[in-house]
Length: 389
Length: 148
Image 1 (spheres, one colour):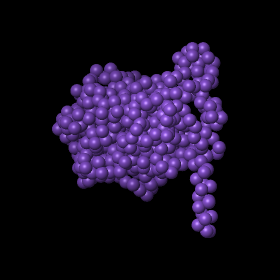
Image 2 (cartoon, rainbow over the protein chains, first blue to last red; image 1 turned 45 degrees about the horizontal axis):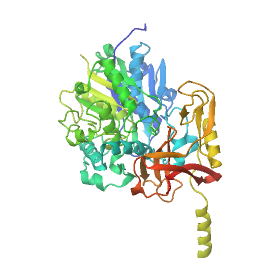
Image 3 (cartoon, rainbow over the protein chains, first blue to last red; image 1 turned 135 degrees about the vertical axis):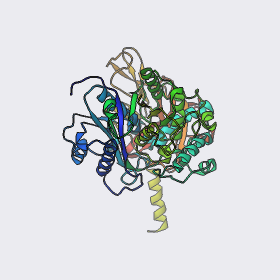
Image 4 (cartoon, chains in turn cyan, brown; image 1 turned 90 degrees about the vertical axis):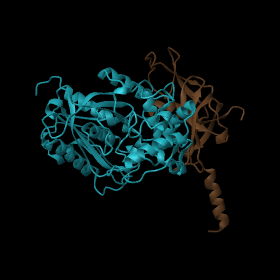
């Protein structure tokens, strides 16, 4: 294959069921969702020549390639930063296709995050500290009783809430919107289980005064895979191509993942601001060009801060944006229309990337009418997906 | 076992610190070693004078490797604060107050606020360093209201 610039597109998405106990290995989940994504695209698994996942994924590239019968792998890489990696996988896949080093890139993330280990429980083991996670949380938080992602995330969010007078009740309004989307999504763990603001306010405190239980993502078992190829080739495959018109990463000075306390102003999210700036510069698009957004929602305040960082509303105005129904069906920017990581499942953000694809295809259960451009964001990385012209 | 013996055993157990000891990496050993001695120190560039935290082997401002380990004032102010209620953090019998502290030297760190009611904490509240015992005979810096 001679190298030349080629536009990249998503040709296939696949997933397993989302559960609390998959009953099979992470490698099997990875193989199942990968096969489903390749079938969706109409590509034989043997043709995969690039593989991308998260640094902390529990399955080895070689083992997965061997299960799929991949005949000659040309490129592998892993993205650091936990869930921050989600949109960065699309970025890397786009870049590999753009550069002409791969023809068929398989992205996967599969985990038994509820039945095998639990991200939400205290992280206290020295052995768990490893480079490639983008965080110093264990080193600088653990002896102080800040041992969970909820605690780490809440400590920055509290500064944001102080600054703009955002209450936990304000956060609850987002939880209600996302659970309403999940309630109509048969793949969601919380299918047919909407909540009211009172349910949210009655759920127990996880981290006072920031997060109640219903502000937090789930712990889930499951896998999601995405297949990226050239736009030209995608046009000849089974599905309507979803072009990756722009994708990037941004890790500003002194920013780190989740225990993000060392940059200047904790009421802002500099990584999302950097991602937004780079993404809009790459594509020439602006916030009002987006028809929907899938925004990493490990915890509800992160959505508020990203809405502001991406310029969908002014600083401190996310609470009014959400209370005013702008993220709801028919609003200016429907957000997390699958139910998000709180409502659908926590597959480390990859299920939100897949929903972005469904919106462009026109196949979401909560379809935004005529959606042509969707922002997918995992804070430190983002991508704009578009209908191919 | 008699109830007296049980009580005595419980008292002995409660006297022993249950807070987790820090994970010590080569680049931060100076910080935790000093804390064990009840000293609060930081890194300052030996060339440009820039203070940095978390510790690192090179000055981000001038890229000098000339690093001074200096005593810090131990004074700062509260930036953000929370209380983890569920699950109870390992090593604690009641929920600690976790805070970010803006240090006078211009850096920020995570610690605990002690000797203050959760409802009385205010943004910008002046605090000073103190030390708390951990498992394994170590100490970590925590903060309390100035004059509190």
